[in-house]
Image 1 (cartoon, rainbow, N blue to C red):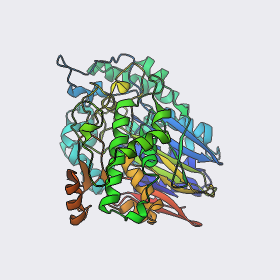
Image 2 (cartoon, rainbow, N blue to C red):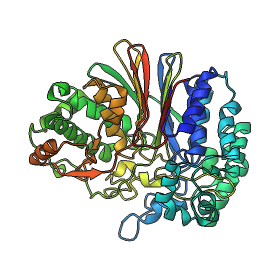
Image 3 (tube, rainbow, N blue to C red):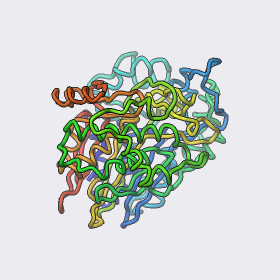
Amino acid sequence: MVVTDDAISTKVGRDVLAAGGNAADAAVATAFALAVAYPTAGNLGGGGFAVTRMNGAVTALDFRETAPLAATRDAFVDANGKPVPDVRDGIRSVGVPASVAGLFELYDKLGSKKKTWRELLLPAIDLASKGFLVDDGFLETLKRMGERLKKHAVSAALFFPDGTLPAKGSLFRNPDLASVLERIAEKGPKGFYEGPTADAIVRQMKAEKGLITHLDLQSYQAKWRTPMEFTYHGHHVTSMPPPSSGGVTLAMICHILDTYDLRTLGWQSPTALHFMFEAMRRAYAARNAKLGDPDFVKMPLDELLSKAWAEEQRSTMMKDRATPSSEIPSAGTPSGTGPHTTHLSVVDADGNAVAMTTTLNFWYGSGVTVEGAGFVLNNEMDDFAAAPGQANGFGLVQGEANAIAPGKRMLSSMTPTIVTGSDGKIELVVGAAGGPTITTTVFQQISNVIDFGLDIGAAVGAPRFHMQHLPDAVVFEKDGIDDGVAFRLKEMGYTLTERGHLADAPAIGRFGAEWRGAAEPRRTGSLAAAP
């Protein structure tokens, strides 16, 4: 089974499974298809993370972007120490692209080899050269990001032919991207990090005063990390370690809540929600202050993941009152918003699974398309604490551990996760898109199934909420909290803020002997498919 945010890409992965490929093969082919058919977040110019369970062994693959070697700690602050706009928009906001290196690493180490590297790229090459039909979902993203894309001439020419939106039902072709994919299919990562594609990236960097060089591209390497593993109410959870904050933050939330019987308290009851909000508040305060790239900073993970830390947090949680975030140490003030990433989950006939989340950061990343290459570059430099103690584009107030340094990986919220039961069999393959709301959404999906017994479709479709310490407010989806519950939460001291929807999180669940996939009802085009 395959689930993604894009129907075309889901079908590509399904076809690979049907032809005998394994979960890693399908994930690679699907990710390349997303780079063509879902350019909002699918990408060659960004990065991501994958958590896998293949033949009973779990792994975690880090293909997060890095800061260019020319980047410095204060590269994106003005004379007053405030972040400047080009940390999140335009060519200077770009981190070293990592997706191609990561996808090749996944194929090389875990692919079945029943499918060649080239065969896995062929569907994406065909989509780029022959085109795909423009649908409402694609048009909506272009409408929302049009002004930003039109600031960059190459992006404007690619996405707005003749200066207007492409027509619904028309074919969207990208021959330049097809050529890039052909080089990757022929030469592997060298077809991207060296040769004509690398030359095109560096040429544009020089022309627009960007930071990435040939050395940055040639030096990039994906890394295998030790997975983050923990238990929640008797279930085994495997998630992504730093430089993703997702696994650690998810573990902290779960550890705090592990002693509460949430089912008895009632699904979305004021008391159950209160305890969840308080656990999220404390986990994000620790995340924002203490996590970063493990190759650059020493993090107190043993402390944060200990039973003693979880017990200490519980001891400060009042039964019927919200704790003001000002009473939980952090620094700075929040601002910003935005859900811009994509997640896919795959399970094959042998029960192997891949949970993979990739991103450009914002929708269409930096807004910059590489001339002659047809792909958009990320704006991941904003995921650093450009000015520690001040908010980034998602409102996260982060600390010195996530300050910019040459070659450093920026902290992420991506949370690809696999849950297994006491029998050792996979129960859930989950992840999400949505900036800092990713981790809380993944927790809610796990909790909806484990704590409250929801089917995977109900767990994915259920209303979502989010608390990230600062701002001191709970964000919830429109009509997502009952009026009476909302009244009681406000009595407890919570500030509630409504948003259209939080995150996008298609998922796969196993119920008995049956696999069930759930598309994301909030995302046009999301699809779950079995071969």
